[in-house]
Image 1 (cartoon, one colour):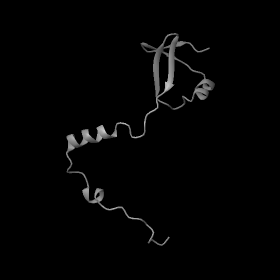
Image 2 (cartoon, rainbow, N blue to C red; image 1 turned 180 degrees about the horizontal axis):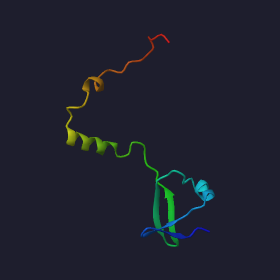
Image 3 (cartoon, rainbow, N blue to C red; image 1 turned 180 degrees about the vertical axis):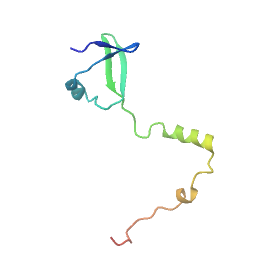
Image 4 (tube, rainbow, N blue to C red; image 1 turned 135 degrees about the horizontal axis):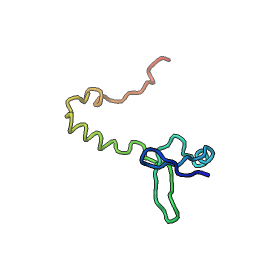
Length: 85
């Protein structure tokens, strides 16, 4: 049965490998929520590219848009149908 263990000034819980596998928690960032009867541990589900827009705005404010390679960004998309493979 898992129990609290001392980790520096904090406490931790050793979770058995079988429970980690069953709950899909392996190699996941975890979210902790206090509920009426205890503590709920679940993986954090992030949306793909979540927060990218804000990060790009911050980068543009910090570095400006001089470094943006507009030649490539403004280039028309092409298809490769005329290429020989």
